[in-house]
Length: 233
Figure 1 (cartoon, one colour):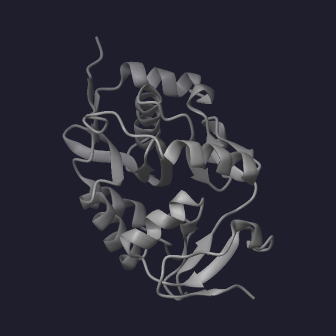
Figure 2: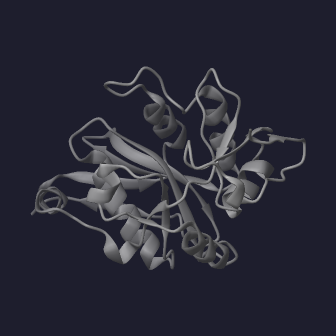
Figure 3: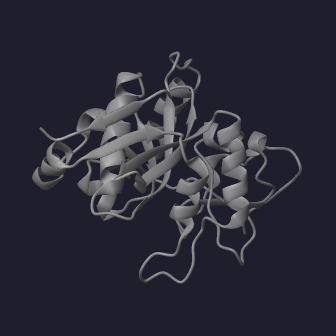
């Protein structure tokens, strides 16, 4: 059994999270900004399907990316050099979330349910949630979104409408955030896609120690005023 959350944004210790399924910690509560931000500061995130209550997770080990370990394949490096594209930040957050919520091939549904879209759009309006977007031929071709607290970034989801479009946004995000003093990006759970980009699993205590150090740091001015236009020569 897992605890059911009350009205206050208080969570059980993450050490009480289940091993099977990995990281399931609690259920219930709400998706208010106060509760979500409190969760992220403790290494917890919401993840649930449309027919489930709100579920809260803190898996161990944790998938993270240290910016200096970013891997750019030869084919992706070629795309970065040769494609005519633009990277924007926060110019279409709502559209990025809706695109990430669209069902993927081989999936019956999505965990980015309408309640999650509304909650993270509210976080965006409050300055905590951000999108990195790839634009090609004037159209949104791919991107990702996540939550930033202090100098900690929590990646949530990404999408592509063109080959490598989400990877372009990801590479620019990692390099930009590294320049802003973000030393670790939370990727939550292991996927082969994230591993191919350099993310790896670390023990929960290592993740939490870095998290506690980073969330209390102030963000540089104009941290989210990033724009890049690449025109091949």
